[in-house]
Length: 253
Length: 84
Image (cartoon, rainbow over the protein chains, first blue to last red):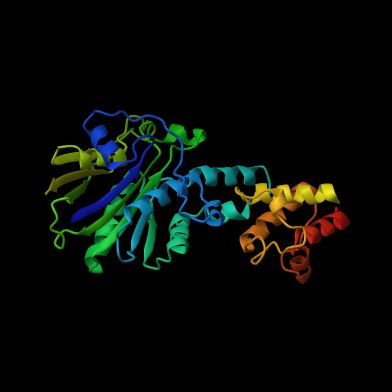
């Protein structure tokens, strides 16, 4: 698949601006824990109060990346784990036979952030919320690309957000995972001829299933960071592996 | 009753995460929903659960009466006082 990446805004601990990401990709800035959240003063307090950390990170990147965009665009929201901190709290409440918070319950679905964004912005374009294990970010690109081409769209918004999972889930995921949100505008590769944008070609193939790898996920590549590094470093091609797929990326001006 | 009124206001603020609002900002007699404080139907559910937890008072979600009980801080406190 081929498409162009227009604007991209991402937030991962201390990496927040395009410059931060560039310096990090060049090895001149280290990723460091910085857990504070975007202030989102542009959202009225009555709406903002219901935003979890997960939603706040997503909102920040979405609102920032869409600044200057003229028309509402369809969106693909993606997350491997969703708002798992909220969900696991609800599950604990169920286990302890306590009443569930209706607000938290209502906002624990996978498309909650898409819904909140639509209410806030008035954007009524088609939106999906996807999850595909460790391949979530790239599979969201597959979804976005399919919509770009099949519906002949000019642009589509892609959002990816995940948090470091709650402690009890940590044995099941890679220790490389970080709290990160990425929002980018994808455009058809044929329509844009600006040198500021990155034209991306991504191919993927299924990996032969390896045996006995189920239990140890540690050291497994965290795709979102691997992708951000590729986007901002000087390499023109890279390969990113997951247990199920091999992703081949190449960019041209 | 005065203590109860303050406690309920504090409960409303904490439960509904009204970060910019102080108990003194909530008028005893003003509507909690839409026109007054601006709460919505999800807040009503949330508040119902919180009041049940705090005072062991159950408010029937569907009844016409519950609308009256939820009208203001005063009406809510009156209801809690009579039913706890």
